[in-house]
Image (cartoon, rainbow over all chains, first blue to last red; front, side):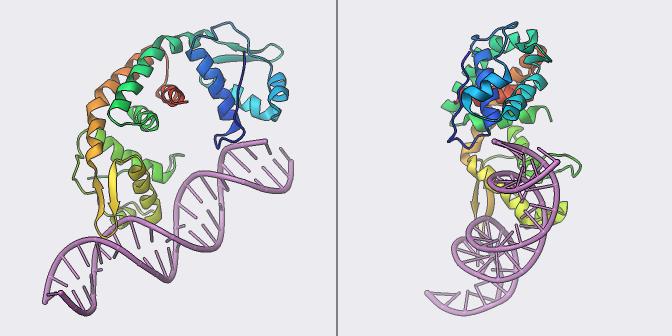
Length: 116
Length: 116
DNA sequence: ACCTATTTGTCCGTATGTATG
DNA sequence: CCATACATACGGACAAATAGG
């Protein structure tokens, strides 16, 4: 379990931490039941604020990707499994969109439009 | 050409304006060559600031969806056509993800991860 | 081809709220 | 909880493109 961040990036730190975990779930490197390192560990290892890591974990919880329990830490939830299942489909769509000159950012915007 | 916004929404106004146009392009109601109403018209009709509308238009320009030229206004660009082409694929993916309990918001995040 | 009034987006700054660490 | 940084929305002045005479 390795979380990477780029201090130079303009992306919020907490977003980078959450993204790192999300990518690991997508790739199947993290499966339901796996425990994430404690927020304090991560904060110390990356030399960032504890609150920042906690915010990332809370975002993942809001997405139903992890369960957060006091005293036990963050555990990848069962509802995270479907992510890996559709990963290949997402990749394929991104590829086809790219072939038409549509960036992932634009595609993400389109996906968001659908709900409205 | 009708642009709607929701003043109550927490979504930024300029984002709502851009989204409204994007949806119309997606649905084929706007095609390359069509001209958007001038930013001033839209601003007055919706009772929001001119610059808020312009910011939405500039975002669409950054996405290569419209061409912005002063004196001439905003015109739907030729590169907007592919959007309508992949719209059905996007909708289908959103549907399949939904069946697995994955929200459009989460799916959009996944799409964004791919590029990194 | 010329002028100029109008239309239209761009650039300057400012206030206020929200996010970040 | 707090200081700072960032994003959002607004306002006024400006400059390019256009249209009409």
